[in-house]
Image 1 (cartoon, one colour):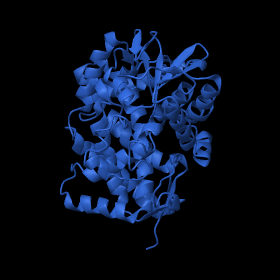
Image 2: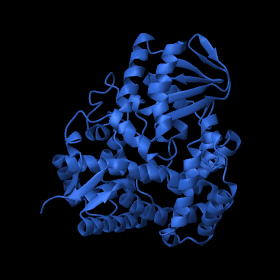
Image 3: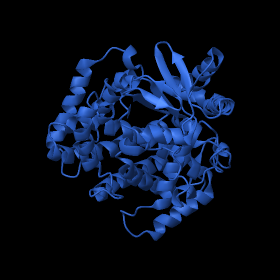
Length: 436
């Protein structure tokens, strides 16, 4: 039976707002703010947030925590069973199209599936599942995607040899070439204007309803996507989407670009752990040596990316809004109540996980992590991320390709052993080649 939600006191609410929610908002939900992410790492904000939420869970017996923030009622859950209820109950009666997300994503993907009303969600979700091949471990066009990854890995290796180093900006430039190749086709690989427009719109989206819309810039951005939708080569995701549903296809592309950006951050953090831990690197190299094809699933490399997402979630908080009055325990919450799952709290919870603060990819291989509803690197339930398999295919091959080089990461001593830092700013990571 569900615990009855409890109203927090003013002091408790202030603690949650200041130490849990404010740092997440400051870092940027849609695109990270470099100064804020660096500040979050220095102050290990995820650790402080965990202390607050763990204390409240203990004090209130695991009951959902009800905050009043202005006119908004927000319920923060602290038990994995409550996470399961929210995710299993999406999109009805717990819609992912929350007030905050609709305000944010309307800046660059107003018709994206994530914020679609239920009347339009089904068609858009079916298109996403079809194009991203949600149920396939390896996409039908996986060979072309892995080839793009290999080209990117060569580019990054050449840069390492030429300059002796690799930082987040250089990695991001190459990562976007890979993503644009896969999503929009080879012609789009160097479309810096499109990437810059998306970056600008996403910065605005960080402010949700508080920032005015740039309708002209979004129109230009959408025109570029529609152009690629009509001209992209076979094998590009937008081509498959256009063939399936020409009317819906362009509106779904911005979310794929947005999501792949987070995948790049997870890969970069995983690479930092690989560079700091020779045994992890050796196992990656062993796996790639034993797999004979370019389309190998690479289970251990995938598990390393998943472990990076567990330790340092790219979705900082999972939000839902109730679409009707919700009975929870002995209390009925009105329609429009917001619910929040703070990802890092569940992903690093020592009450459920023996390896909460350790790098243990094996827990993704033996089923321990998949069985835990508190671990949601790709969300969960009916509205879980349709691109999970594709993202893991691409990121695992890039991670394995870069692991072939003897890299050293600055501040690697913090990643070389457990427990790992609660907060790691991927934008501040820098690598160099090892001594030869």
